[in-house]
Length: 109
Image (cartoon, rainbow, N blue to C red; front, side, top):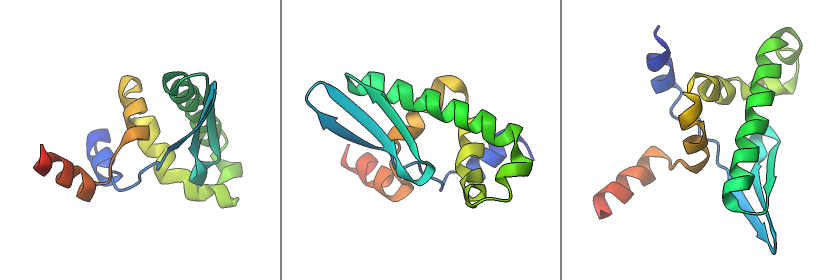
């Protein structure tokens, strides 16, 4: 299977990131993976969350023997999708709509 075919198969694994905004601080929360990104702006917090995901994905795949025996093994499809996505497009995964909502948005445009 080619990486782009695998990415297509993993499309249904959405990150469901949300932004919590307070005066002077934005936090990006990816609850299902336990990832937080912090910054003074949405862009800074998103960049931080992507960096945290990169670190986590690297550690996860480096030590799969450990993670495969924990509840975190459930993170595999999301982290595989993230790792297979080109670095310049990884940030887009945090702002992605599920396919049904994407179709509604496209129809409205």
